[in-house]
Image 1: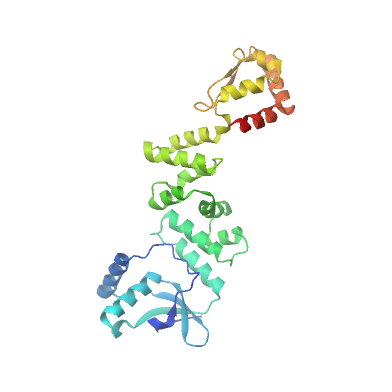
Image 2 (image 1 turned 180 degrees about the vertical axis):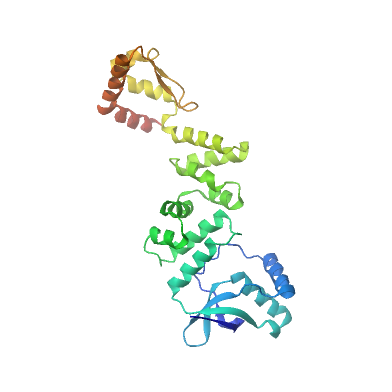
Length: 285
């Protein structure tokens, strides 16, 4: 059950695990305070009672609360209390409410929403990513990947995502890359060359195949494992530059010959020669 009350400012506590996804600078607080002075508080904050000493814990509305506090410091008692919705809820329910409210805010960037998922997960109130995903109405994969940004990506990429340099749709390309070194190469290329979506995907493909750098040399080493394959190179099997084109061409005169070529390549892979050569190649890099 909820009630509408005027709550004294000094009775409201901002909990340590409060999900704050937007930065709260002095300019933003002053702008909001000016708006409240001229138009009043248009949206009430939400609090929940805690303990028996007349204290309340903030659930939603930190910027509004801070704006009221700034007005109180400047103008005194007139701003000593803030209109609030008071509602009984557990700490976990409070976190769930904050996440749901943030998800439905139109002014939040994709980065800020991802940050909200991360902060919600770190509270320990969710037993699984799937539970968190259900709370915000997103797919399990979307939530996992949003949280993974902060765990797997270099700080430079996170900063770029926050600043808007790295758009949310670009993150899929970063996730595919094998290591942070490749991620940073992609980031530098995006910033330096102002790459478009298709160009980013293409470059990510090439970086993802970095284990095939010097691909002709590597595939020649693979071919050395089987003289039948080696004899075909440059004739029926053409190795293009995978780093720039990602292409292996097989020429055949008829379907019977095509089947023979496929069997030769399949036998090579099943023999373990390919895995052995790749392992040896990695050691040399």
